[in-house]
Image (tube, rainbow, N blue to C red; front, side):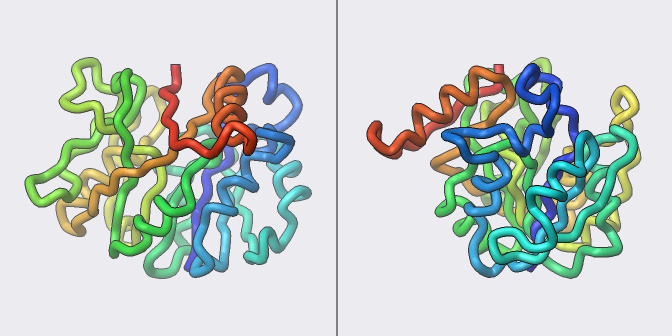
Length: 236
């Protein structure tokens, strides 16, 4: 099984930590974020497709052609045209069912495993500031009903954490609605889910790394002598 990891962004909110390195190589407890992301994947994932852009050669040098025992293919996103366009660059490489993740969050391994137990799924977590996230509204049967990107008046506080199990049917739903020149995956997922139901799965551990202070918060959670605690930090 494949996992597509988006790692092309400049990480401007993480500056100065990303002045000279991509955000995937920012370290938490002396370990780059990309290690945490890949280590959370189950053994069924044997191939990584990493979309690179800003300082992407550093990621290629660090991960190489095999990373944590998984073969790696790189795709370069030359223009910052959004998450949907980044995924579409992988269209000819993706085969069947695949994992999709953003390259700047830490997820619990058990949560990823539960997501993988569904044919298609979307991991979510409750947040205090839903206007900062892609917000999810469930259907009565627990599947995805709507996704709204950074709503001014949020219909719920249930946010997508960016980890999903999808399949190549998603490429039937071409991105059509740019927002300030970028095509977000949110509107594509919503259309896709109407024909191919997506289970909404709540996760116990999600540590987004959006700002420098989030690194300190993540280290507090992950430091062994403090104990491993489930935690969620909203991107301020």
